[in-house]
Structures are given as structure tokens and as C-alpha cells.
Length: 559
Image 1 (tube, rainbow, N blue to C red):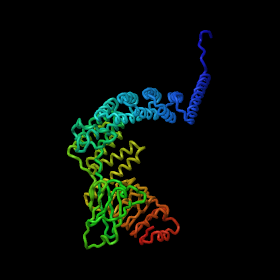
Image 2 (cartoon, rainbow, N blue to C red):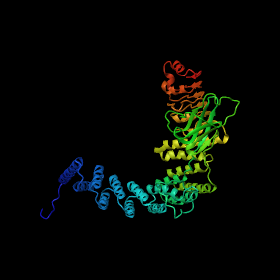
Image 3 (tube, one colour):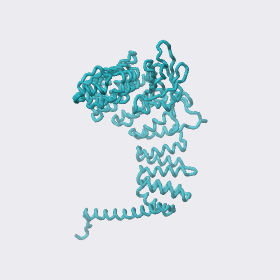
Image 4 (cartoon, rainbow, N blue to C red):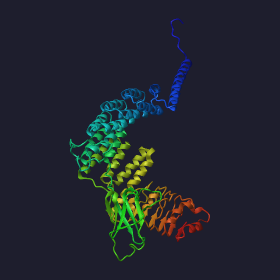
């Protein structure tokens, strides 16, 4: 046995580690209690500063200690801020993602008479070189950029460098998407889309300036992102950025439609986005005279809605002989609209169409190499939507079916997205045909959307789909007279609220099970025909008499 090192057993080692942990814990708890006592007594001295440093050096995520430390620094009013920055660097080495450390560093930097912002940017560079997705560091960097006035083109070059070293960098791609609109805005005002800003003008700040990207610069981004996803087709960060590049222009904020009912003496106004009419400065002018009206949303659940309605004073427009001039002014956006309908579809330029066709061709080539790549499939669908949604409808449906098979965990998402696209296509067909009948039967719809664009529709067919409810947004169909929604799985009718023209409702073979589910139909004053055959509610005892009492205006009841 001589000359051999005696090895401790695993049990002995664990016991020694336990005793060491207990010893450290006692020291830690004693220091913590001493700090809490000092703070309760209002003591703000050097000893308290040292105690907080002792604990934060090992645990920089103790927010209360950072708060106490700031109180002490403010009270002592010493020139300790430079030393505090050095201490914070040691804390960030312990935990580079410490909320408290980054927040405290921002607080300290803001109190320096002449902050060394170049040093702070260098610190961010070092931290991001270790972990390029450290969002705490990214947040701090944006603060430093704002405070120091770093030029936008310099920050864009910074994203070039990070993306060049690692394509799989969500943060860099996202930061790039916020910088491009500043350097290459779509606005015709200086700086112009294709020229550098004047040297005499201050550089725009990423935090305070916002424009959409000019088309010429947007097209140049395709080559960069294409290199990324051809290098690694399964990395989703570049695909997300690509989807941002392919995003169609947002609809202009405007009044898209005004509907006037002489019979009911009311006005319905549709906007391109949800608004609060009571605070948006909406004014109705009839024959040159402003009218005092009370605007209300189409459903009590909505404080912001794309559709608002109001009742006109009795006798205002009920006379059929005389013509009237009615205009709705949206003073918040300095725009107005009379009774007309505008399409929200924005057309592509010839140049962009050519480039997107080329992008579609490239993605199809990649799909041949990676036939099961969901990101490539989804991007092809979006490119087809941007180029010709109706012409590519059959291919789009085929790709959605493939997506559900290769990415089954997200099949419900693809079903909803496909439903959205089918509704958009049907709206386009309806606009081209200039009809007010909307048919979406047997389209495998799982949800409804864009209902604000159907204000003028009188007849809608949603039969043979997979709908579970008629959402509150359905109340935007203020001209609807006939609703067919047979053979779904509908169990909720929240959207059938005060549809003043609704006369016929067919809900055969759905899942309506309670009489209370039909309560909202009482708000539809012209309802005369209701078909509930094949619903569980029809099995309730005395359902005929119950429905007759609930809906006395219904003369044609089928159960």
C-alpha cells in the first residue's frame, strides 16, 4: 500500500461538497441580511456598497441589490461611475445575459459627463462575438446607438459583418430590417431612395424614424438572403427575413367604403384598418351640413373596429325623390369618402414582377433539391400570392397539402393560412365580377378573415367547411340578407349580432346545442327563415315552442 494515493470515495466527495456549499450559503445569507438591515435603516454608506458588490459578483441577477446600489451611488455623489463600469464588466462575465447588469450599466453610462460610447460599442461587439443572439446586449447596443448618434449606414455595415460570419442570426436580420427603411426610405422627401442624405442634415435615428424601404433597395436584398438559404435551406432565420422582403405594401390608411341605407336611415363606414371612431375625428356631412351623429362599432366587443355605423336623424334621407350628397370625413388622416368602394390590392411594378418571377424560379430549383423543405414550400406559396394569386391557386392548394404532410405539427396553422388565401381569392373574383354574392362552399375553411371587406355582400355561402364559429367580426356584414353555413361544426354564433337586413339563415348539420346559443338572433329584426335541422339543439324538449317564443319574427322554422 505504500506510495499509493488514497482516493476518496464518491460519498466522501459529495459530503465535502455539501459542507462547502453550506459554508458559502451561510456567508451569502449573512451578507444579504446585513444589506437588508442597512436598507431598512436607511444606511447609504461605503460598507453597504462593498456588501452589495460582494453578493452581486457571484449573483448579478439580484435586482433588489442593484436598486439599493443605485440609491447609495446617488447619495454619496462620488466620482465612482468609471469604477462601477469596471465592476459591471466582471458581473457580465459571470452572466452575460443578466437583466440587472445591463440595466445598471445603462443607468451608469447615462450619468457620466462624457460617456465613452466607443468603449460601450466595443463591449457589445465582444459580447455578441461570444453569443450573437444575446438580446440583452442587442437592447443595450440600440440604446448606445441612439445616445451616441451612430450613423445608420455604419450600423447596417455592422449587420453585414455579423450575417457574413453567421447566416443563422435572427437578431442581425431583424436589426437590418429596422435600419433599411432609415437609409433607403420609400418617401420622396430627402433623403431620396437612391441617394445618400445630405451631410448638413443630422443622421436619422433607428428609434425615432420610420419609413418603408424603396423598391430599388428592396430588390438588392434578395441576393444576400438567397445566398443564406441556399447555403443552409433548413435554417429559418434567413427565411423569416425573406418573408419580410416579400411582404406586400401595407394598405393605405383610408375610408375604403361608405354604405347608406335610405330605408333604415343609417350609414356604415369601412376603414382600411381598425379604428376608434369616437376618438379618430369622424365627421359626417349631408348636403353640405355637418350632422350630429353617434358612431358605434358593429359589435359590443370591439372598441377598435374596421366598420362603424350611425343612425341619421329621422326623415333626413328617407325621401326617395330627392338626391342627397353624403360625405364622411376622417379628420385624423385628412381624408374623406363618399359612397364608393375601393379595392385594397396594390399592384406590382414591372421591375418587381420580373424579380419576383426570378425568385420563384430560384425557389423552385431549390425545391427540386430539397422537396421536403417546409420553408422553401411556404416561400413559394408567398411568391405565388404576390405575383398572381388566382393564376397560381391550384399550385398553392397543392403546396399547402404537402406542407401539412411534411410539417404535421403545424397543419392547423397551414389550414388557417390556406383559408385566409382562399377568402382573399374569392374577394378578388367578386370584385372582378362586380357582384355582391360571396361563395366559399367546400373550401376546407377553418377560419374566417377579411370580413370588413364584405360590407356590401348580400348573400354568403360558407357550407361544407370546417368552421367552428361565426366570430364577432361577422357582424361587419351589414348588408347581408342570406346566410348559408350548412355542414360545418359551428357551435358559436357570436357574429350574428344586429345584422339589420338578414332574412334567411341556414345552419343545417352543425353543433349548436343550447337555446342560449341562438340568443343573438333576436337582434336581427328582419329574420324570417331559420333552418336548424341536424343540430343537437333540436333534440331539446318543446324546442318548437321555445324557439317560437325566442324568435317571434321567424315564420319559416325548420328543425
